[in-house]
Image (cartoon, rainbow, N blue to C red):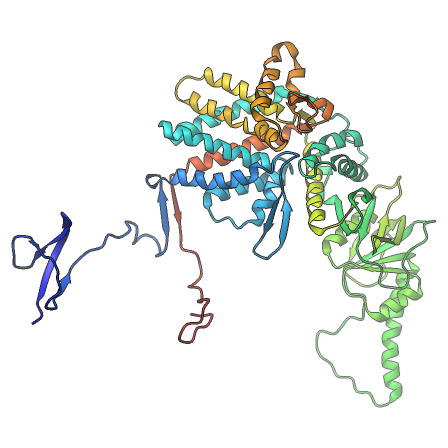
Length: 606
């Protein structure tokens, strides 16, 4: 006989389960043993998420009560450690294989984080900070990531001491305002002539050295020469007059980086489509740029042509030839020697262009069309026909040459002409190396954009000299601040020590010996003046104490870059600290189809 009992209020007591049985006032202890089968109907209410009726099913919520802030800092620490060893001229590269199987070799924080699929929301805040630093300044992405991660590391100690997140954020903001004011007092040099290639190379050299150590002298000269070609001839140069898109990079496999060159104009990886491959260099040549197809325009609707005999068929094809011939003759009569086609070129049109001795180059990218228009001063034409004199451009040299086994077409202006585009040709043995060198050149060009700003010419001491000086000054400022905020300010100062420490580690020096020597060199500031501010880490190992004068090495940091990096890193760290709860909704999309075969009929809709 089967017994059915109604039970409720299940509890665990002394290792046994106790519950209330309907109709019995006292709780009973029941031990289930093998015997006659019994069926118990239990009314047990399981605990549910408190916000189950508020959000859609599948969301996750993490609060500070669950240690959310410590988990976020631990996640950021993983990325921080990854970028830590890549900082400085002796930093290590990382090989990253993204979701598409593309292999990226780089030591740039923004490049590495962009290729990684990071899903943690707190880490994404730092990723966005590094991207903003790269877009605005071009340099200092590793500094933003390392400094923001170190600020969060030291804040974890403050949280363990009992400080609230609000107090830490207030202390960090006070210290940041103090640092931005002190950086103006630490300027050791200034670029006055922003057109001088020597002065431009002074700014670009440290930026490229942190990416391509050993090639900084060669690449900085190339970037300075290319920038000097595109700067306008006005007396004063502003950031609005310099466009980073004016410097183009062409990568050609083979040779070495020593074979790199700069052209005042553009270089295309393709050769002309027709028989004419080069134009004489004795005179200037007129250029016409077309964005429409160079062919007979097709009708919008289908039509039927009724031909009665062979003569009508010959006349029909001959009419097309006559029409194309008339169009190409109009272009040739305007004195055009070169035609740039942004779309297709018909065989018949190409035949007549070859007959009139006009060079034809097909350019499929609309961005390349814009650049070639800036080089020769032409206007892109959306119609096929004779251009007006105002729509034509002029070019000095158009020739086809062979570089490393590749046929390229060069559009070049002479020295006295003004060109708004310059091209740097890079040579290398592997594609990954060429890609990394291209990123280094792009960072150097972006640094020039920061230089063109109103106060962009002011330079700070590099090689960790500015950071080690800030540690002492921020610590003194914290000692004069009353209350618990001085703890946050002192830890903020301690975070800046990570820069010289990592520079010493990656260069192979003993940190325990170099850092005390660097502190001692900067402690003589009242008597030594600016000389002590220029003492930085010797990454080349030429001095026994590990300290060198950055003016001899030419290692400078731009004031605008340093200010922006400190501001962005502090904002990113305080944003993470100000979060007390993370609520993540369920990802969009239905359940994924099983990888292994299961019984039944599965398709993409299941």
